Length: 161
Ligand code: THU
Image 1 (cartoon, rainbow, N blue to C red):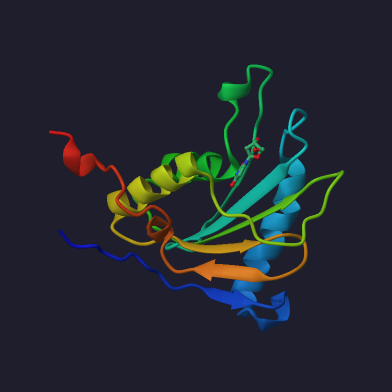
Image 2 (image 1 turned 180 degrees about the vertical axis):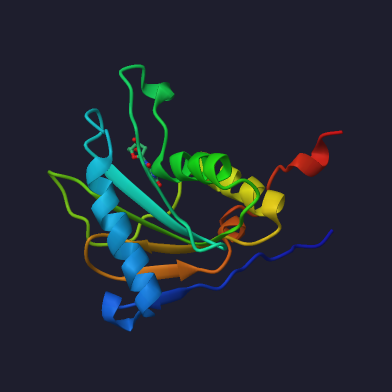
C-alpha cells in the first residue's frame, strides 16, 4: 500500500494591471460577454472568451432553460462554438468571468465538474492545454496553465474501446 499525492501550480494576481496586455484584454472581453448570458433562473451570468492558436476569438455565455438540466455553461458553449467554427484548432487561453445582479463578483470562479470533463477532452483532442484566466469583475485573478489539472484521475476516452 502506498499513498500518492496530487498537486498543481497556478498563479494568483492582485489586479488586471499585473496581467500581460493580451490576458487583460481577454478577461475584459469575458466580463463584457457575461452580459449576454441568459440566466433568468440563477441570475448568475457567466462569460467566457478564448483566443485560439490561429488568433481567432470565440465567446460563450451560459444559456439556461425552464427545463433546468437543458441549460448549458458558458465554457461548454464556447468549446462547442470553437470546435464547430474552427475545427481542430487549439485554444491558447480562455478567460472566464461572471456577474450577478444581486450579488458580488469579487473573486474568481472555476469551471464546474462537467465543464472540467469537457475541457479535458478538448485538450486531449487538439493535444494542447487550455490555459484558464479566472476572475470576477474585480478582485484577484487566477491563471491555471492547464485546465485538465482541475480534474485529477479523470475518466477519459482512453477507457473506451
Ligand atoms: N455556470 C457557468 O456557466 N459556468 C461556470 O463555471 C459555473 C456555472 C452557470 C450554470 C448556470 O447557468 C449558472 O451558472 C448557475 O450555476
